[in-house]
Length: 259
Image (cartoon, rainbow, N blue to C red; front, side, top):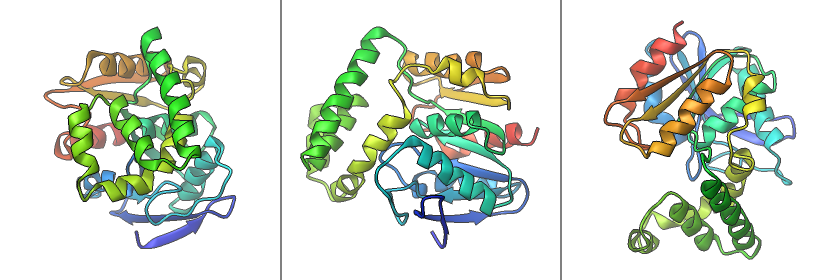
């Protein structure tokens, strides 16, 4: 990230942009930085100005306690103001929840696309999210960052053997560093359920996407988003999972953002 701006509370936000045209801001999800969504920037920058940033508490961006979801919405407001005054938003996973919140808050957003925002679709899932929140909060308060990362990986469905292997790998240090931001994504997701009232207030077009190789509940959540916003559309991508291939996703986003 080669550029910095300050958010409303003084937090430094690292970002970079590529291309020319209408602005699109890419919003990453949990356990990720701007580098995670950066592969989308290259194909999209052929037609748009694409902004990639590190959310607060990650990568090269700063952080200012106490955390509140509203501060992350203000971060997006600052980025949009600094890069043209209006933007479309693309958010992946919990980053999609943040993008939707930003649109609902009245920011100068012209369109929103989200990929597999993981809203819970059953009482069982909601209970699982509540247990996760409780255990995550305790782990972070007690300084057990590795345990916090492990809780998140368990939530994603990874086997314990895979998680234990990851703990011994070189990549674990980077994951450990991002652990405090897990609380931020948990807050962005609210109680975990589909925020239908908030979604109903979004006036701009919303494209909600899922991979057809992802779990059924992911597709249900994506469809619920599209059905809850006044100008929503739902689409699946053949053969894709939560780890969507940029070359498959980019043409779909480009077509939507060109409307």
